[in-house]
Length: 291
Image (cartoon, rainbow, N blue to C red; front, side):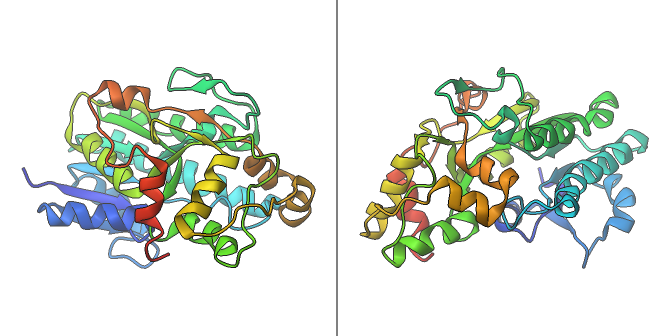
């Protein structure tokens, strides 16, 4: 059945690929952005016309030092916009069937342990984890109004673009390597699997609540750096010291890069989801082909 899908973040790395896949299968995709075709000023009217709403918009987390002003934009771009969409759904005479509202594995906190995290793991208490908690809770009015709500908790996304393009740069110049101690965990996922998971959340009426959207085999930063070097035929011996990262990025952002989450997709796999890229080496070979 063809659907009308309202999509925020549809010009971004993940959203652009999702929009293409949805259009290819015949859905009508309506993009919300500052430049239109639908702006945030008119989003409430569009909610009432949508069969599904997918909310992926948000200020990039790792694009610069976390000043008070910038971290405020990170919060508002996620929480305020989610609350606006959820409130519109609660008030709508004709409600969407589903609200897929983004989140991140950062909800489990800045961890230095080897504990495996899944959707039953309590949230962390650091600044970014609190953003994720409030981000998910902002969708509550839609759920209370009878709209099915799914929260994809997305890990580090690998593809031809996005964060990997920045990570790969130093390796291409033979100066790549792990960040910090290298023992922190990286919950990664190929962009194709992210999009496939989002499509299933749109389509399958039984999928509600939080879902870790990350490959089933997280790796340490040391392993992640070695795999990038191997995919590019480059060494991975140039470690970025923690003190240098803190000086360059500030304590808040540096801490998120020096720690991680050993997150696994327990609920997705229980729902029968099969990953196209369960192997990091295969994911990087595909993603780094033209980065």
